[in-house]
Image 1 (tube, one colour):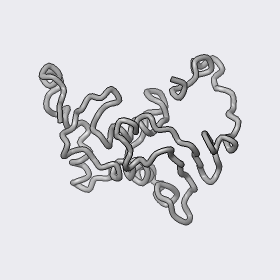
Image 2: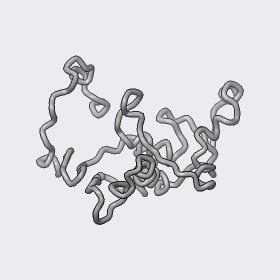
Image 3: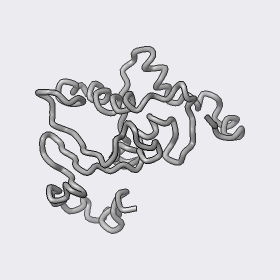
Image 4: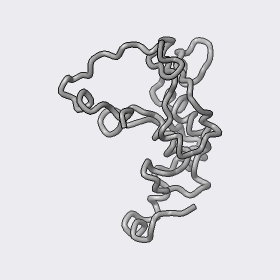
Amino acid sequence: MHYQGEAYWKRYGAQARQMPPIRKMLDMRIPVGLGTDGTRVSSYNPWPSLYWAATGKTAGGMLTWQARDVPSRYQALRLMTSGSAWMSGEEKLKGTIRRGQYADFVVLPQDYFTMEAEGIKRLESLLTVVNGRVVYGAGPYSPLNPQLPPVSPAWSPVAVYGGYQHR
């Protein structure tokens, strides 16, 4: 795999290849959760985070991990679901699909495990169900899509320009 140019490594050092050292933490059996910085820094969209974890590349394509340190797609998905549920102390309520847990799931237009890796960061659910309620529907599921509440606060740029989904 190709890493960034020499100037990058001189500036940030070799340790940048291991930031954060997810593979090392997993090997040491340290609990790891994966999420978004959706509150202020990024969107709530989980797919760019899963893309990063499953490829070792930033959204812009910069590779910072060695191939041996990149989690599998399965591992990345577990970090996003059951790993994060453990981090919040909610592993008995969510993070896996089983009896007694919240009915949170998505229906995707492609198979996350076999699709082209570059497409992961642009995935969009066709159907999203949270706690047993449909919260989003597109394509064949669009009749199930609930009406969205008004953007809040009203002065938000999203009210004028739309969100990330309106590229």
